[in-house]
Length: 453
Image 1 (cartoon, rainbow, N blue to C red):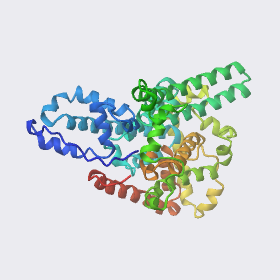
Image 2 (cartoon, rainbow, N blue to C red):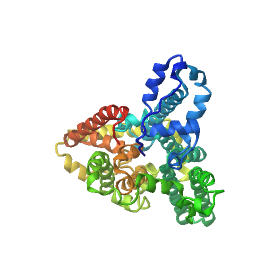
Image 3 (spheres, rainbow, N blue to C red):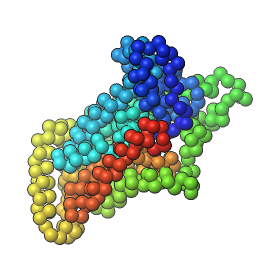
């Protein structure tokens, strides 16, 4: 999420290494934010601005480099070993995130063809260079997507663990608490107004608040760790400005002071090229949200409370306790999904044969699966919050990788490519072309230390 102009620092003791050329080649790939992560793994948090990079990835790199890859230090050097550890962690995490993404897509979309296509799009997303580099994108996507998958599968404890760790990898991981908030909101409503059990509603709210607190805890603990190291034990004159605030937030101060992040602070004429760089992913995000809202206005604007009974039973599979264990468990075995996807395939074949596609879209029946299903709603709301934040608050060019772990982007892209090939065929080609161009250019620019995102 941040960039540094620091050039890679080469190991001064290369002469004593068994394979110095390999060590130098690996170190040359440690650029941009990778410099911070490797340095933190090697020396800890030395400077105030380094606290902008959360500790999960550096901890994993440090542990792996001192255990599994420790014997390689005399061969290629300590810094190169740290780099190898980071590359391995992120690429393995990306494989698992892709597997979780496919299982999540199968469960939500109930269509194996759409799930496979969206998973392939995720594997070749425009931010792929960051998923294979020493960045937090792979680790975050693995934990966030895996956490949501376990949530809809009824494994709340495992979901809390995954999502809490995602907040220890990237700051936006705390936003994943919104999935528990959405679930709690609907379960409390069901207990209060459907089952008429006030005590049950209070228990549901208490459990939801506890889950959300657990997700926030790692990020808050890290802020307290920074306060302890930088502020405690210093005189009033030596204190940094953020230390004197009523609520001392180190992360917010670093973002604003060192990188100029803030509401509308990036809206300058000189930043127009960066807005153009981010326009494809932001356009896809906002189009997916608008299309869902226009196609399912009752479900979208009521936050799922006015969903039809047919959609509620078939779509909102992770909201009610009675559905989280039975329906989702059977869904993971894909037996009911298979029946549903067969119906979807037959329905799609009939649609393709029709001449008037637009007329069919207007009279489209209630969708039990696919992108327009009721279960997609919390993911769309999450994407909306992230997209607005990226556009109005952040350095907008990082939106390409900031939004890359959001499933609705790929679900909507696959939906456009499959619903009506005559109408959306050009968009399918544009999506593949956009991904391929960003992968190619990103690999060239990023690896050679040129600005990309």
